[in-house]
Amino acid sequence: MKSVEMGKPVNGFYIRKSRKRDGLMKQVEGTPTNDPIILVDDLMNSGGTFNKQIEIIKESGRKVSNIFTILAYRDKSAYAFATDQGIDVSYLFTLKDFDRPLLSSHSNEIPKKSFAVLWKFAAAKPNLSLVVEKSAPAIDSKRIYFGTDSGVFFALHQENGSVAWQYRVGLHPKGKGIISNPAIHGGRVFFGAYDGNVYALDSETGKRQWVFMEADWIGASPAIAPDLGVLFIGLEFGLFRKRGGIAAIRLDTGKKMWDRRMPEYTHCSPLYVKEEGAVYIGGNESTVYCFDAKTGEPRWHIPVEGDVKSSLAYDPVRRLVLFGSMRGNFYAVRADTGAVAFTHEMGAGMYSTPLVNDDLVYFASLDKHLYALDLASGKEKWRYATGGRIFASPKFGLGSLWIGSNDGKLYELDHREGRLKAFLQLTERIVNAVSINEQSGHIFVPTVANEIYAVRRA
Image (tube, rainbow, N blue to C red; front, side):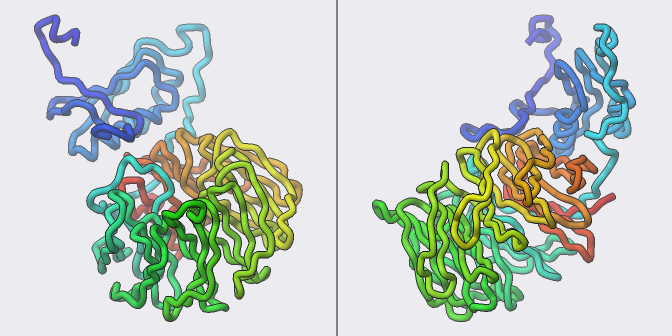
């Protein structure tokens, strides 16, 4: 604006920290040109915001030439993420100008070239206004499987991201096609869709084996019980006071074995525990249920504070069922009775699935933190703050703990101490758990824009 007043107009644009969820939903407001690009901000601490902006500019096929800020918290050597790419970093002041010591020039926030991107796949017509846990990728030895907002289910070749096959589901609410995480078993891939159906497809060819058609919508993910030959899945209906439910469906034929109804929508995915002979599920009526896995007979149900949106986890040593609610409470309850063993308060609700590893449980919250609790005592071991709300579920693999965040970062953490080991900066929110091929070392990272990145440690 000032340049226009001076008669020397220059082009300018804004880069949003994250997309708005309405309107044009653009990350970049304005039109970048092929002129040299200077990123401007008021202050620079670790440089994480600039790092993300650089990646966004790269995706547009352009290059940042300079970074300018009023105040820098660290010595210039801390900003190697920019200078190593030939980007000049300049500022007017540092903390030393205000009689404050500089922060450490060694920045654990911006590791040097931690990951190499092998390939990227982007599905068409993502619903960018729908920011929730979406269809997380599942893998076998050769392919990666996931659903999209447009209602297309994909199987990709892991080595290069090319499409092995695709399958389109039926009519569904616009932008809400397949939210369900797929499950793979016996040469088939199973998932639910918002057309109200559960599908079983041949994992090699994508040919439909059977379809279960008794719900109005399905956002939940299937839980496989190989010993019983069934899958369990949450259902949704447009009926007054009978809006949710759970069904047990035969894996071979798609025939319903039993079902139960609940008063509100069932977004939660079921948890099957063979040792308990039970299946557990939460609902939007702030209740968690336990059913006999074979018969569907209710064993117990307990009220909790807030809707239970995602899935649950099981601690076999202490026989605890673990889950979080949208009121910001984490629960550990006895698998056989539902009696509460301990709770833990978070700063906001929880929309992801806990992860049990040895004697710790890890869970993420919309308060932007990943938590680790000791399962024996219920005491907090550590917590790690990310730069955005977390819908994604934590994942363990390649000797590390992995979590994605709405800040577009995939964090690699030391699972015992919660210490940052490395991170990958992407341009879109990461709302799902990653999938990891331990043999190849490939990490498959999904984003809210129905993208899949295949990356490997550099």
